[in-house]
Image 1 (cartoon, rainbow, N blue to C red):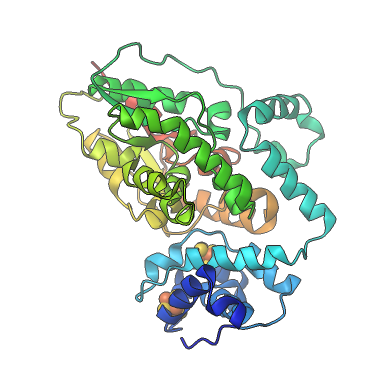
Image 2: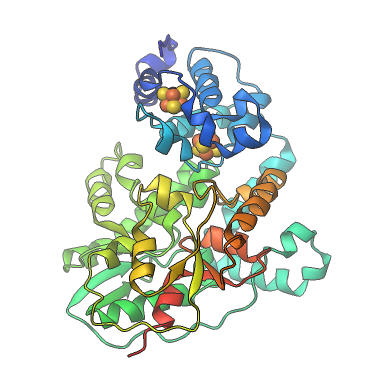
Amino acid sequence: MQTRLTETYSDNTIGKEADTILRSCVHCGFCNATCPTYQLLGDELDGPRGRIYLIKQLLEGAETTRKTQLHLDRCLTCRACETTCPSGVQYNRLLDIGRQLTEKQNLRTWQERLVRKVFNLVLPYPSRFAPLLSLSRMLKGLLPAYMRSNIPARMIATKWPDSKQQRRMIILSGCVQSITHPDINNAAARLMDRLGVSLIKSGNSGCCGAISYHLTSLYDARKQMRRNIDAWWPEINEGAEAIVITSSACTAMVKDYGHILRDDPDYAEKAARISELTRDLGEVLANENLSALRFSSTIKRIAFHAPCSLQHGQQLPDIVDRILINGGFELTPIPDAHLCCGAAGTYSLLQHGLSSTLLANKLTALESGSPQCIVTANIGCLLHLQGKSKVPVQHWVELLESSIAN
Ligand code: SF4
Ligand code: SF4
């Protein structure tokens, strides 16, 4: 694709990155075929190729309008288009740039700005999110139906293993997951302990930065990233082998720290090292020897919902499937497994209509093979599916760990 960027962009880092990405697109349109929003809305501007054109026009000096921002807002950042693209276009990075440019124009209504501000101030911080969740449970009957179904039941965390193994890995505590489903990391820690690895929780770490980043609050996102790096660095110096993450959207974000902080003179090098060391739980277990463990469960038939951040964002499409099959589970077939469930971080709250259509379609697909339960690998998908699913939904490591017989 030919470009004629304005002087403002032709000579800065953002403009140069965008230009390289734009030039790699041959506007073939293959990506539209797997784009969930293009499939639902049928509008070229709600597909990846159209969004790429819109961002190109912005960089070439076109007026930024609310309509442009709306088409960019409707993107799920599911990255199915990147998996499909034969030219390797880094759409996700280009969208980040487009969103930053439109956000700077301050085109949103005050109500939209307020909602986004509240999400940004509350969701990434467990000490703020926990009381809000408790209050929501108390006032559940007064909330709109779509919000009610997203409020999870209270869960009691089970045991964190005592043992101190010689091999150590850091685990991301995260934000929303640590309050709504604390048992996911605990199950991962017990499983890893059986394999001779202690998972270390670092008290000063927190949200990976994804919520703020995708709300285009880059200042807050970078602050959260630097805080995590500072919290993990001493453990890395002490020999921690990896940073293991149980929520695939968070893994994809931390794997991107190196890119996002590349111009930060104090953190660029450390951020690149953190990204190198970051592994999704599935990647970690795929490299461990599980043959000494015996798995036995009354649950046999399961549907695995592969989050977009796992299959497209990290390009790890089958890694969890193989672990579950080796654990003795039968995975039911899922039509259109490449399509997003509509969770996409705060998308389910900000783009409720599209999100609920995608959720209904996804549940139909997941339930079509009559599974006893649905498992997934990302907290956002888990909460989203759990709200409406007819069968139980849990994280795959909870099911796997609870089925260990010895
Ligand atoms: S992003 Fe890729 S698939 Fe889509 S139009 Fe460009 S080159 Fe084609
Ligand atoms: S990231 Fe997903 S929703 Fe956005 S353009 Fe690509 S395929 Fe469509």
